[in-house]
Length: 314
Length: 276
Image (cartoon, rainbow over all chains, first blue to last red; front, side, top):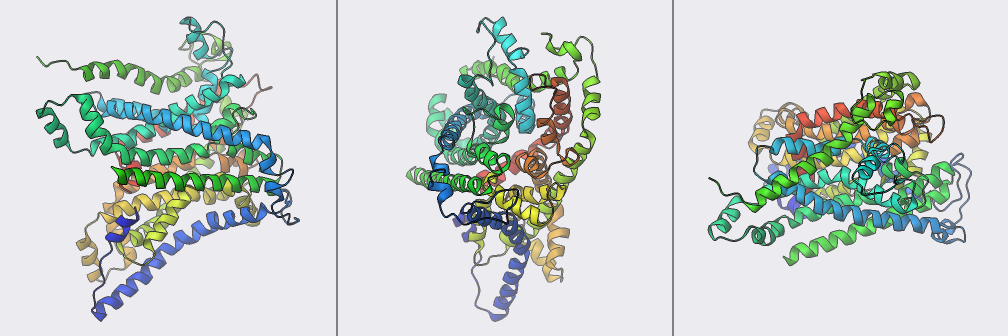
């Protein structure tokens, strides 16, 4: 990404008139970027720094001004975040959730993308239909599914009972053994379209002469897919996976609305907000927030390094 | 006659279930929203008698009209601010070569990967200090965290592709840089601007965490929070009819917009991800 940004820069010419013009152009560039930078510093940079600082204190949310410096006690103390089994439960839930939902979405998204790429009169209609789950707000989709999965009156239980697949209604969101699976499936329903659209865009960029050459040579379709299509779209799929993984790691809305208090589905974001807002523990909550931030930063960096190495390997 | 290929068979086998999975939940929500009273708990798919009682109930039992207006104001404000600020930045980042440009782009991308909950306490402090708690401005400001990086990135991608001659001719004629951005580039960029605006609008319209945390009174809520907090006499007696009616009301305009602009949306989404 950086190399592209840098190579498009025009080389400076030696003429003095030109270079003074270029200098004033560069000054102007900084002026134009300034508003965006100031906004981002004020609403992202500053709050991040303050969160870090608050995590070293015993502040309460109701009164942030009276607080004492407690060092790393919120992290590694006896009552620190790292000593709380519920935090580790939230970490485990979030990681499993991200792994499962992103893998399922990638496989299903690839299938849907291939389907949308298939020449057919239904193409536009299909793409429109696939966009619908993506356009529905997460809170609304959480509510819709909670209603459809209602243990007594839900249409899903009614259909499964009628088909004889289950013998008694299931408590999809209340049963601790089922709630996690339910959350993953609803997330997959909501976000597969995003994956499918990004993969479709990559599929459409595969030059058609590749396919024509393969057809002339009589190469079977599955072999074309495995040896031509898949390697060519892999970089785009990896980028889409990074985007989705980062999204999945901060999952909040879906879990808060569908199973807000259940320990078996609580994500790190839900845990952090509960400590901060419900329990008013600004210091402790900030420590959990910082850990979440560090974890996501670490995953991002290693994921990108891995993706880069894979892309260079091919 | 054309030979029927295996992939065609597979295709026609896959189409019905995909259509069903994609559309069934929303169609079922619409059907439920028109069922009154006990009809909601019957096993019929479509209501026997179509009733608007749930729609009336949504507006009668909470300030839902106000909530809708709030969502429009917040999402509209977020789009206006993000676009103005990011058009300026995108011009500089996309068309002027200056030292530090690569670092700036990566920093902005970094912010977009930020987990929003990680800055919740710092942002809460900032918003309280500015006296914006329980006001819509708090939401406009905080939503910029995720819309601004996105709009900058997408607009930079499109800005780069505009012809250089156009800009040079205008600058030669003595046009200021703001004239170039807003009078010359903006009209050319409008498909990209429309797509980014729509995506930013949807993101702000759907935002839940900040809206839940930074507002308190029912009159200041945006629709996602209002829907999430619709409650009945007990947790076992949620008014599902009302919830489904509210869901249909907030989702229909979005689906309409998405379907009208679907081509632009796909190009906007992929500009940020694939080309970047």
